[in-house]
Length: 333
Image 1 (cartoon, rainbow, N blue to C red):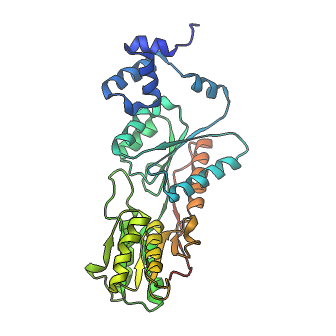
Image 2: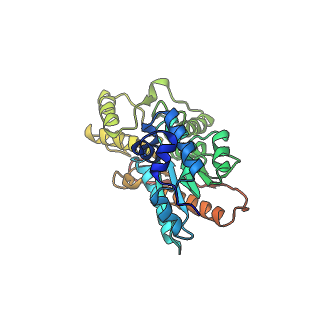
Image 3: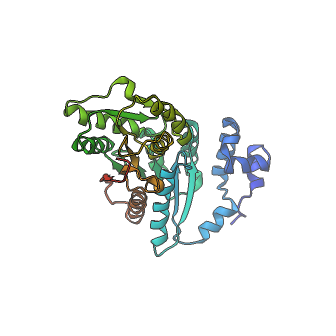
C-alpha cells in the first residue's frame, strides 16, 4: 500500500503552492474559482485528507454536524444555536459541531460546492432559502439535512406559521379594544435568506382587516434591524404627537428601540402606546416587551433531534414539523 498523499503532493498535482492548497481548504472564498477547481480536483483524485480530517476519522462514531446560517451575531440565531448545542451535549456519545456563516448567495453556493470535501454527516440550515437544486446536491453528497425556518418536501423541516403569528398579535389588540394600528419592519431582505417579517405583517393586517380596520400608509414605518437607529427614528415620531396607539413590530430588536424611544419621550409603554414584538429573545423580559414567542431554544433542540434521528435511521420518513407560537404578555401592551 502506498503512502498517504500529502499537501505537497496536491500542490504538485495542481501546479500551485502548498499555501494555495491550504487557502482552498480553509478559506476558499479567497481563491479564484479557476484555481479553486484545479485544487479541488487534485484533492479528490489523490484522495488527500488533511491531518485534522485523519484525526477525526480515527475517532469512531463521531457524527460531524454543521449549522449553516446567516447573521450569527443576531440573538435569535444565538438562541437557536444554544438549543442545538444543548441537545447534542445531552447525547451519550460525542459529536462535532461546526458553524458556517453565510452572508451572501455566493458564500452559500461555495459552501454547497465544498460539501463533498468536508466529510459532514448532517447540516442544519437556518433561515436560508435553498433551491431544490441546491438541496438535491446536498443529498447527492450523502449528507442529511434539516431546514429550520423554511419548508421543502425534500427533507425534514422545522417551521412556524408566521402569518398566524401576526394574527395572534392582532387578536390581542382587538380583544383590548384598540382601533389605531401601526407596524415597523425592515423593508428589504436578501434573496438567499427567508424573509419572515412579510408574512407576519400580512397576518396582522388580515386579522384587523377582518374586524373592519386598516393601517393607514403613514402608519407603516421602516428601518434597519438596528436598536439605535429605531430609537432615533421614533424619538422624532413620538415627539410629533402623531402616532398610532398600537404597534406590531415583527422583530424584538426593533421593538426594543421603539420602546426606549417611548420612554425617552416620557411615554409609558402599555399605557400611552402599546408595542408587541416577535421572537421573545433573551432580553425581552428585561425590556418588559409583550411579544410573540418562537420558542427559539426549543426550535434548535427539535431541529438537532430530527437530524440525529435521521442519521441513526436514514430510512426514517422526512417530516414537516410546525411549531406553535404563543403570545407572552408583559407591560408593553
